[in-house]
Amino acid sequence: MIDSPRDADAPRTGRRYGLVVLLFVALGGALSFALARTRWWLPPGASTQAAEIDRLFTTTLIVTGIVFVLVHIFLAVLIWQGGRRTAPAAYWHDNRTLELTYTLAPAAILVTLIAMGAVVWARVHAAPPPDALVVEVRAEQFGWVFRYPGADGQFGRTDATRFLTRDNPLGIDPTDPAGRDDIVARELHLIAGRPVHIRLSAKDVLHSFFVPQFRVKQDAVPGMVQSVVFEPTRAGTYEIACAELCGVGHYIMRGKVVVETRGAFETWLAAQQPFAP
Image 1 (tube, rainbow, N blue to C red):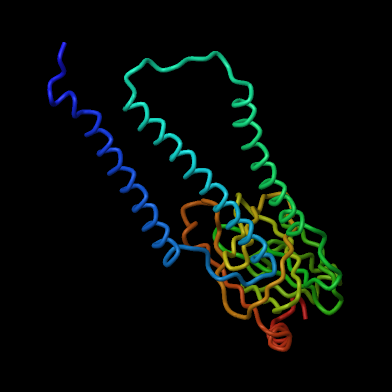
Image 2: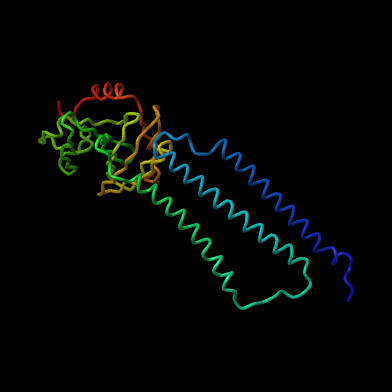
């Protein structure tokens, strides 16, 4: 049987289409990456942890990107060669060397990345330093409440079942002397260069404390207190977002965190009304 000219040109046409698709994917990927870098990339870091997390993110992106490109080049070469072959494909039952290579190599890469992530995770969730500013943060539908200890450095007791009112949103026990100088605020103020220990809780449903510039994201679970430690490094005003779909008003659950000098922070704190002056 003699192949028609159209049949003889089919493999060549297929390879041309494949090359066009490959160039389109490569060009689209490069343009998408460039556009993402200019418009949707990570905001500038504003905490000591941000540099470590960004470094880990970049390393992961480079390693997985190299593997992605190599795997697809390998697949393209196989398809290209397969289209040129006329003999039946070779078959073998197993190849121990090949199987060990494509099993152990990805495993070693993944274990290395996971170990690097575990080191960063341990640093972010390490015990707070003694000089850390302790702030209680409570998430609720749909807002944030912050509490600072007063001059005694202690938080007063809370009992939401007995003392929770509009004027006492955290349910601070008015009979506890330790709570009389507590400061309850609707803005989070922090000191640039001083570590912060956030004690995070939720009043009603699952929320998530998320400040992209600090690279901090921690879920707030009702009935639990989560610890978050970080150190803001750059003065400015940042937005706190709830990163969990927590109800119909989720979109308005936005808070504000102000990072300022120690003097400005103490001035702001002195201007706040204690719970029971």
